[in-house]
Length: 184
Image (cartoon, rainbow, N blue to C red; front, side, top):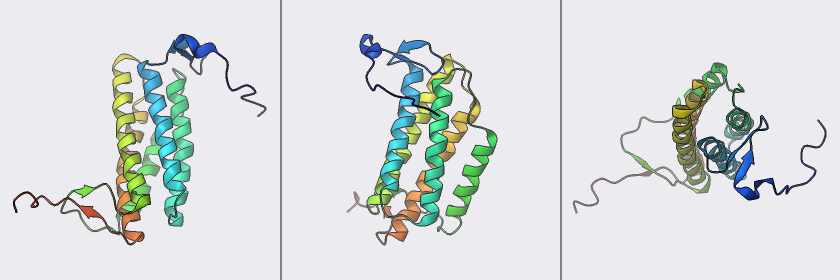
């Protein structure tokens, strides 16, 4: 593959622009850069989850997700490029269904918490939702394939389910919202 980055700083971004994957330049605060930047932030948040003690199935799943998020970020960074497909969304759904199968039905809202890994997973979930919102905003003004939005939507659902799994496997348990607390 060769060296991709031989010099970390180029000074080309000092004017407030950045290079897209197709070689064009765009403002650093453009919708496209915000969308793929948040996908990068999400990938980093998942890296924090992975740094903890996880069940093997969760570790394998999130590692695969990190690679797909790198592909997804590339798709957003290169206008017209396709890297996420329906099969990727279907795989996420299958993983989500697998992790969710043994969880009890929800009767209350869950607060972020349940141990460090679960809390980090909840944080990643909220970043996934932001990435989805920013990608939708981009899709209103530029071409974005619908598979990208669907992938981010399913990923936030998967991260929610994984947070539930991690809260339970850690022994901390889920933190349920107490809607009665204000009535006392």
